[in-house]
Length: 232
Image 1 (cartoon, rainbow, N blue to C red):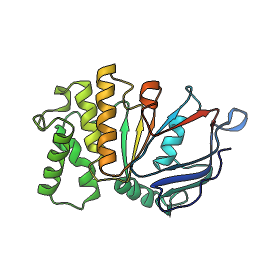
Image 2 (spheres, rainbow, N blue to C red):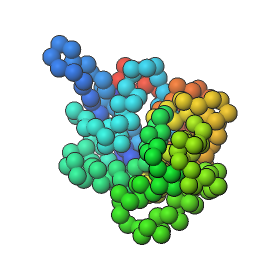
Image 3 (cartoon, one colour):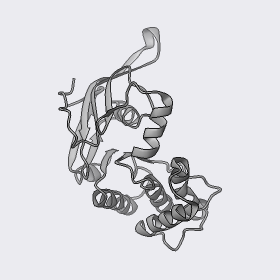
Image 4 (cartoon, rainbow, N blue to C red):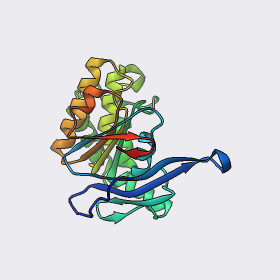
């Protein structure tokens, strides 16, 4: 079991004693075995470990995409692990940005429209304000001249830059990234990591990323090795 994490307003995200089981009956697997963790604003944490050790499961629980079987999750100082589906969805939209290995962009839409989608869901800005913010974010990731390109007209590295801009759209406190460079070559991996971490640090956002890339991991502020559902 991971050591307990002291409650504090300095944490953007924290969890305590997370357990997760998958399957039923004799095939039931104890995937997470008491994971405790905290992510601080402006810091980048890498979760590393062999395939099947529980890294992505941890990230999905922290992102409120799944429920733990036991344990607690806080976004800032708000307990989220026992909240309703509606509250969890609202918290994800407002406080969490996701970047995945496969960008999951809407291919029939432009880069601009993809970045505007989280803002439309949150519903706090006018159409003009959303478009202005999306353009600024695309400029930040080096795609200011490709705002109206369909995502199918962009390279893999460019598509992942759009995904980063989309993750930052609602100015979330937390960025969760699951193998964000895993589908890219060495050069584009470095570019994407640099972009993600630079923009997050400038905005004081906590970044938690799962990676198999040791070069990426060692450039993070903290490394959390995981094995058999526990932090080592």
